[in-house]
Length: 149
Image (cartoon, rainbow, N blue to C red; front, side):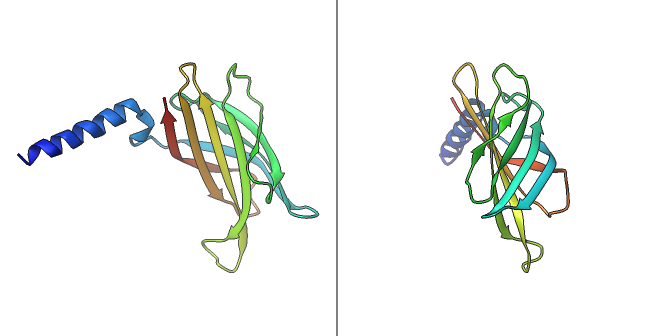
């Protein structure tokens, strides 16, 4: 009798994973950041960078240019790729305590990539990265993926 609840739970989880393929363990998805710039402006730090990603599941490949200030919240990036239906890319950069050196503050980049397919399924990937001031290029792991159909 105790096997029945376990079997029902397993069946429910399998049904959810099949209905929402991104809920299952997704393979590593990384975005490439190039042309990173982070400079002190008059009232806040200004940032700019280019980000690109290969096609991943339902999300098409993309390339975007992101600019803003560290106090401005998420801002839409300018799509540079020529996909007929590109994803929406937005970014935010905050100054945070360096997790490796608590005496320093460094920028932390947050990026969201959203895409709605032709069946009205909404895909949303998000990732972030702590950045030392020196590199011009780095990778961001897309760590949170959701799909709503």
